[in-house]
Length: 519
Image (cartoon, rainbow, N blue to C red; front, side, top):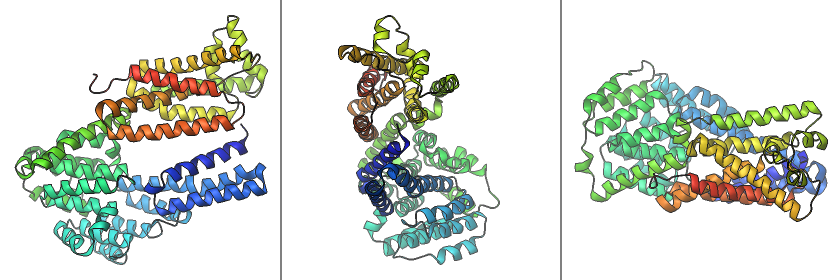
């Protein structure tokens, strides 16, 4: 596939994905989508042979680098590495100056000073940003209360100065408000606020923020195992002392005071004054029996929340990936790369004769008894773009499917889809008398893994009514539709091989995966 054509597809697919997700994205990313499509359209009209390269460079600067940078900043903040987050945010704000990124480094400076124990300087820094009329200003005010563990002041300020629609819409404020309710022992209000936040943010859901809110609710309701499950998943990026703090909170609310106090007294940081204040507050906090405080509807909500957390651990891939590394996936990638290197050494991966001699699929040769080509063709690729695209798909979906199915079933699914797709290509080639046509690549096997992941999410949705499975199934269907569109507009692509791989993988996933109900 020519690089220019590949980059055009990349920009189109990225823009299409952003348009589909437009309702969930901040305005800045919507602007980026318009710019990408405009640059692609203008460059195509003026210089079509360079349209991919031009729009690809814009995609790199306006989409890839800012999105990777913003993700890294958020991860650093979650790990409480505020100095590194601030330094990176300074760079990101120049690439993506919308959505509050311009003021964000200043806010992170306030958090950094607070973490260093310089609370007066931190408060002064945050005060310079405080305002009740802007999102960043409200965030600065909230943080000023949070750094001092002033939960009463935080609740009073938000009740008086922040209208409820804003309190729900701005997730950072919503989460802080929920924590404050829990710190004050208002468990029913905490759970009611969580339900409102989940409903209001369902079209712009941030898994990290949503699971942080769930962590607060479960911890203050004494659900120790569910808290640990959350901290093994997406919240595993939290700093170790933060994880220990919330496990201790859950233990305290579960009535195991001695265990909770032991965990809390294990760390008394010398410099992190806000954390020290939070620990001191927790040590003074009396255990509340959730069973006596919660209403019947609130208890049902807690039970449903525990079920949701277990389902998301199973179908989001986080829990399984932490417990089972994708060693078979990594081995397959390494084998493909080694074969690619060998083909390059033998004369080049674009040389038809080299590919044929190394085992490319030719239908009539398979019929003549060279059935081994059904397997060897899976490890050959025509060019580095072909290899890179397949290995990226294998890395992402292979890791997920291997974690869900286990190594043996994963290998069975991979080769069932890959060899089955090659066999389908062979049958179709003989049927249409397409003699002499070579087919190479792991695409059928990789798309089989995408199909298997779709089957896993489908079973989770149908049998366990897991919302996370339904949402991920929709995303996978979108990916498969984009792949089919790409196949129709890309020359020299085996549409039959890709479609058969998807179908075979889906069938394998249905048979091999067992839900919680089936186990």
